[in-house]
Length: 231
Image (tube, rainbow, N blue to C red; front, side, top):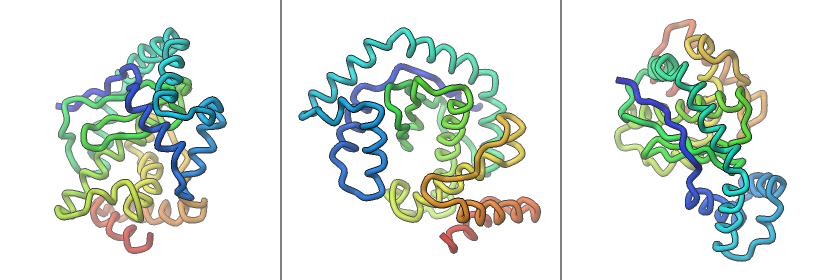
């Protein structure tokens, strides 16, 4: 039985942890997230404590509750039309089965969309339009099975690498490419193959490799092992 992606109100503690972590970061490749957060919510830059951040987020939820609740209903209605078809397609593409009964999407005031791999949950901005909503959900669902598949390929893999280093970077490069597998395109249409972690030339290189893999009817495992050699 396939799980159902369920949309719920954003997670206050999750958002607070995220905003606080981003505000404090000094890691070079994450300063872009900080700049983006400050651009959307310049008030966060002025906060001094975790309590200040939490209060700001809480007020954003209160002030925009009607719109957020409306988006929860809208996202759920639209998603239910494709849930089973898309989850089955993703499972077929990555060649592994779903192992959860439900997946949670938190409709949030956060413009940044974090995920939690252990319990299959992620955040989506309530301001997202239909195309962005489809892209974010599909991207994150691919990540859940992608990393499950890596554990099947490498049972002793260090799962902390799923959020850093080359293993994480490759996952971000391949997710938009996998979104363009014909089985997925048939359901949600074509997507941009570009990834925010690399330039267009690198994405194109992996795209060409994937096209060759599909043509030769290679397994996902064989394709992945080719990719990890050149990342």
